[in-house]
Length: 262
Length: 265
Image (cartoon, rainbow over all chains, first blue to last red; front, side, top):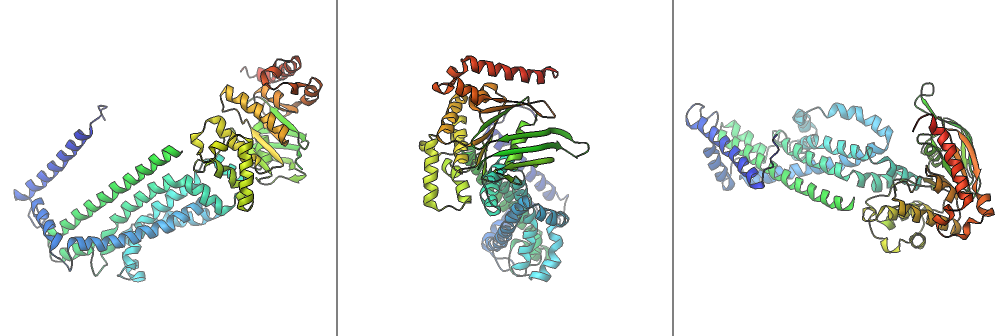
């Protein structure tokens, strides 16, 4: 890293250059005939397919409709992960026994990729809403739990001592001391969870039989419509970026607010 | 209510066989409403003494009891004022003070009355809804003292409470504590390495040796304070000029210097 700081404009310009070079290389490879179109559709074809799919349906729905139903599943999965992971993490951070019981199982399970759950998710929860939500849940759950746990575990020891000296019981200790102290860590965990949940989407929708971006891509793959498959990939990338940018801003806002408080 | 008793207390950190012995056979009896300061070289284990009374740590041998009951865990009968204040940053001044009362399940009306009087006692009325970071160090420590006092504890445990404050604020707080002790006397165990502070505030001063900490000497300041009528002065600097004060201070200094001597600090 050199030390000259770049202005915002310069950073944008270099980023744009990267995108242009990438598209140029992609376009060059495909239009020159070096790579067959079926192998890799050129960017302009993907772009026009993308625009076309915004309004005309494929596999029963337009691209925004597919994205909408994907997003619903995704929201359920991530919210469920947060609703279980954060409280469980805080409890594990306070009750040593629970920590000792859960940690070994969790440490094993979290290395299983979400997509590995596909067969069982379909078997246990069906291919409607339950199965896909479980796969997204599997992706989003570990960071929720780990960050809440670490946040609770590494609270300033003096604050715990002060609370104990004041006669604070378990429930109040968790809700009024550990939880507020762990907020920055929990929020960072939620952001990672949101990203991993979205990444698990295509895997989740391999087993969906109705709608969704992943479903659309599987259908397109079946009829060798590579431009449509790639349109799905582009859409997933764009939505993922938007989710990340929004959450980053939310996190920065929270940090600023807490910076004023703490 | 409010006596503190150390009986043959040892503290070893680490495994019993190979650990570091921090405290060696501490015996100390603090009477109800008595103010005892412990001074000693850094690392002598004086803070550990306080932490064991608070119930944050257990003695390796011997017994510590408060009001005749053996200490096993922390509790609101033994309120602690920490050097680094340990206020909850996400709670306002009022909420910080109120937490201990909520834990006692007092009704809201009664809590309010007690919080208001604690705010008044420490001159915090105008800062009741501020967050700790909005206050100076001295004000934060006032909140911590109010949070301790409001519990109506049997004993007050103060661990170098003014160590993090600047010299001027420190003097104000010392005078404030003397005022409090007159208005609302408590059993106080006060840890400090500031000799003047100990002599100015305490009824008795216990001097500790360096590690492993033992109680070397206990000085009766109260009898001298009463005989020389220190209380006729409002300001700490006037008391500090008295010959009787200087004499006591020098005595403690020399005693501590002996402890530090072999360490060449």
